[in-house]
Image: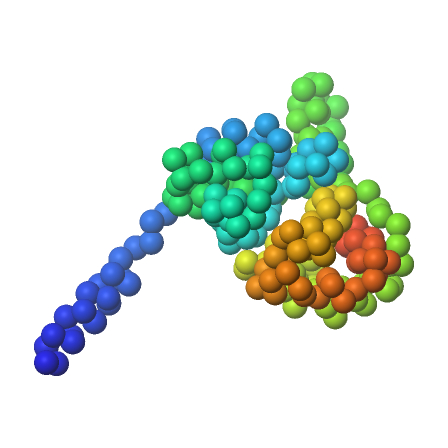
Length: 220
């Protein structure tokens, strides 16, 4: 009997020792050609937040949201045609997520040497992501954020694991997602339709959004 038990254990050990399939960043870049129509070539998003920034986002979060779109557990009509399995396989999702998370956007305007032509200057400027300051009480927003949000989204708002980066995201996009959470149209991660956001006042949420715009870190 022991012999039969050992065989599956051995197989499991062998499978665990197999190398994990590497992501294909070139394939991810190719897939991003489709995403760029709305989210821009650099994943900055567009139309001042109608389409969110996805560059530099947490890889696990991107993967999970693409799968949610595909399964329609997160309803987004424009995304559905692009995330059906025949269009975007699990391998494709890993490739595009890895590619997007590796894009780093500057948070201050570039310094030109004077030798750049107009197109080069334009391309350099397009890689800058500066979110305008939102109005609100920064002290209140900071206190609430660090107490209620930082455990999941990180003290600097850069996210961790399955929880998305918030800093550097369009304020009106974040507000729109908050509204969806509060209406129960979008689950707030593992909390379901009721969570931390439901216990906050509208002004508190505005203060948090203002605080997030205040902690963007200019790249030296």
